[in-house]
Length: 165
Image (cartoon, rainbow, N blue to C red):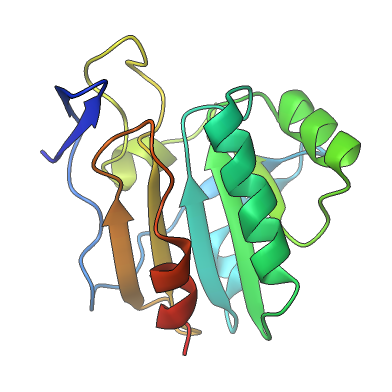
């Protein structure tokens, strides 16, 4: 079990992020059109998983905007933004913001959070996903991870993008 923080208070997660060098666990999440997106659908591309509690918070929304801007300059890379928000909320947000360089997806009916060790076990956000970033190469091998130490701070965008090479 890993630990992040919410307003400085220790907040455990359901497990550990996949380690650098590991192969990503398979997953299926739901896109904004209610279609399923699985890891196998993304094979052959580098993958950035931007994981966050809810797009309805300013910081989470900013992470999606920022990764959308970064994704515009990335070759052979998918940026998948994952939360437990309903697909409708994710679609409404991305549509209103004109965000089309990322794929937003919901883990609301999957074991993604448990499989990736990112379900918050404490704090007022219990049950949502911890702010984290995982980067994998074209073969699904993990090349970078970050469990953000304080939920109310942004991830290290530069390090995540740099890991892509």
